[in-house]
Length: 141
Image (cartoon, rainbow, N blue to C red; front, side, top):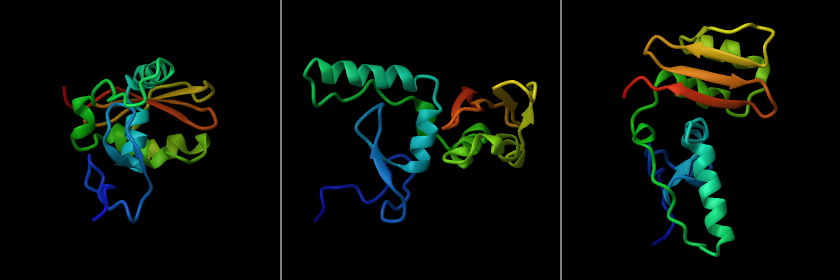
């Protein structure tokens, strides 16, 4: 019997078919699409900083700051676009967001794109390498 999870602890994906990593928010083992969703959460940078501070203070068993409820719900349209953008070049952000029902609310020359989706979610995409995505509004409270 293996001590390692065989399925993503958030979405249930088979981890023999997709890469996995431990969450920055807690100790869950998650699949790469769930990690993309996690990186796009507005609290991700703070969770990462808390983990780094704990490790520097000698706490090698830091349990995390707690996973936001949004990451345990089905992905909204903005998050679906984030998962599709993960690993793609920044030039594709408009096409990928549009394919997920997104409407651009930004100047095409700017380095940051803003997209709104029919479900009420919103996404900010910084055209950097790698692409940096932040979900600004989730489709549910």
